[in-house]
Length: 376
Image (cartoon, rainbow, N blue to C red):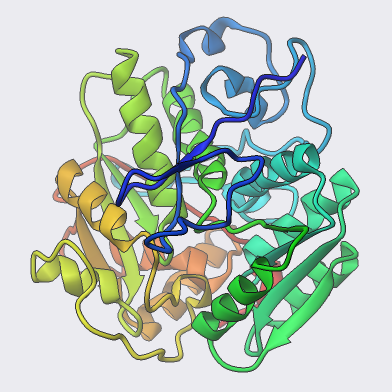
């Protein structure tokens, strides 16, 4: 017997809507939803059975499967290893997920939600990785799917999307133009918008990244989490999990959230430097190797800025030269990741100036495989 779906709540004006019939965004402010959901404790997970997917944290997840079962759309996502790097820094290898990026964590939640809602079609917009993940999990769920991508997305990513059977819609212009086109299509009746930005079920998938770190480190967290930020879905998921672990008294202290942006597209870093609570003006779309975080107007900007500030963290920016060098350095260490995934290593690894972590222990994600893009 499946539990009822958790409904949506607007963090700006408090509007509520049932997941079964809600529009893809708040109808009043047009902003993204949060979820009306109270996570259960994962205290027993470390001594419980080894579930081969992120659904081992079912107690803390919406869309809980029936007891003793795994949701039909699971591909065994999650459980990626953590490997030591240098001076107290470790890397979590999320590029080892089924579609080769961390976006599988959220995509499995969206596909499971869509499966229960039975729409006529599923759509998503992406710079590549989220679209690939949604396409794969919709294929697993037997759902028709269309993915909107910007014209500059790498051919390897579009090939992967097509391979999963999704229809591909290439949009002229940048990532923001792609998002606008998808949101227009999302208003079509019978459409489920599998937005990794607007739909909060995605964030409740990405929070398992943090739960896995907590479990792998024996019920504790590092002093800092270094996270790439464009739309902020991994950072906000981590912040969710930290709050939940605190609420259940499973941690005593919280890590600082260190957000990394490309210097070429850094609207959040700019706002943070000026101690602003929201974006300031318009940020021009500029070319960057870190295409996965090249977001000029992230819809959850206010939440991202607040989460970083409340954690005692900060924003770091990295140049194109340092991103390219970091990708090569990681490859020389046996880890071939895409340029976006190398951004965090560029920020705090051996090529970083001084010690941006101030000696704190940290975990960073290597969140997309180099096979998706090739070398910068």
